[in-house]
Image (cartoon, rainbow, N blue to C red; front, side, top):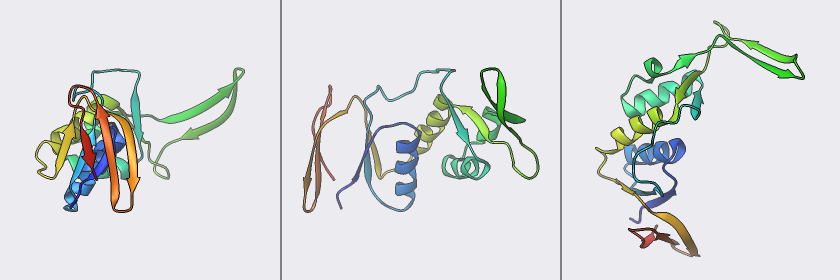
Length: 148
């Protein structure tokens, strides 16, 4: 079986690869970076309670302790509050977590998956659609053709 080709090793691409591997579907993740994420405090992920629980099940990591639950959100325009949401029992507060923490947990979980290959320094250059699948070409130090 040809692998599923996933372009991008951010939270969505890594989560998809992990979920596919758990369903016995081989995949290759094209990562244009060096294979790890640098800490960038300004880049965060906001996860609803059910999504945070899914991430914890997939990664096996207790992510709730790595983030912050806010008491509420407030939107303002020209110094006037336009909308306000208070979180509580009726609506649980979403989890705010640094993106590099989440992708690090996903990469750690993927390291043990035999059906997933992460191709670092592989930026998508060309993709060709065929009746039986696609062929993708990547550039970089590991530039090659991928069939999926």
